Image (cartoon, rainbow, N blue to C red; front, side, top):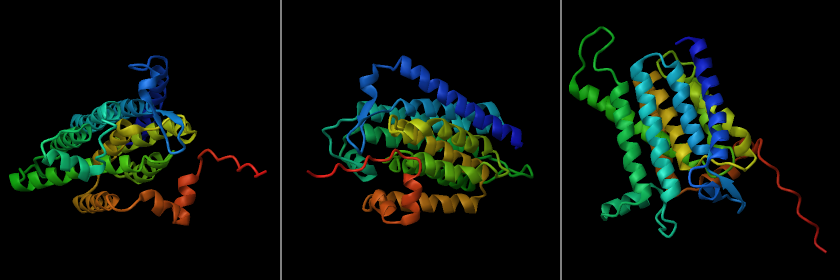
Length: 293
């Protein structure tokens, strides 16, 4: 994949994300209040960044995708992350105390479908369909792969897309954190020789467009933006990375997802100097405390 295509994907994603965010500011579906949430400082922030990022990712990947299958796979995975994430953002039952993957799956096991459970199912199905589209049924020499081998690749690739979507969402707890993590992960993938360079470059472009307002704490990704960002990142790996790298990435995303049920990522980051400095870089500084009388 040419450098020009990668640059085009990043530029398109950045431009469309910025334009979409401005358009949503003028005409927010349901009104501005519907998109406001309270952040860690107990201040109002807008989640309109989320759908803007999701649209930017899709357009960025589409305009520079090397083939139709790569474009379709990225579109399906990213759209599923964005759509089901926004549904959870806007329709979540705030009285329901179930949180995390375990809580939503537990509700499903008891016959209760929460918006979080719907998101898990929707993103999971979208990830599997995207993986099926992205995974060729024939080897490079033209011979047909076995159904079992193809199915295993689809299952592991779908799991990688879904866990990547969930992991980026788990990081969206402080300004800029999820955007920084996605950028760091996408940067090397954008240089890989496979078909996922446009999706990874779109992640870079959309993240750059959203960074200023996210770090200024006027916007946040919400589930819609974070899930879309992670799904696009996971799809870029599926399209570019060899099987051992995909399996290694799946092991990491799964381990971190399981660990998140018991370990606070914020606490770990704050207790690790390098991670703490990176996490705080670019964020709005708190005013010094007022002297006591």
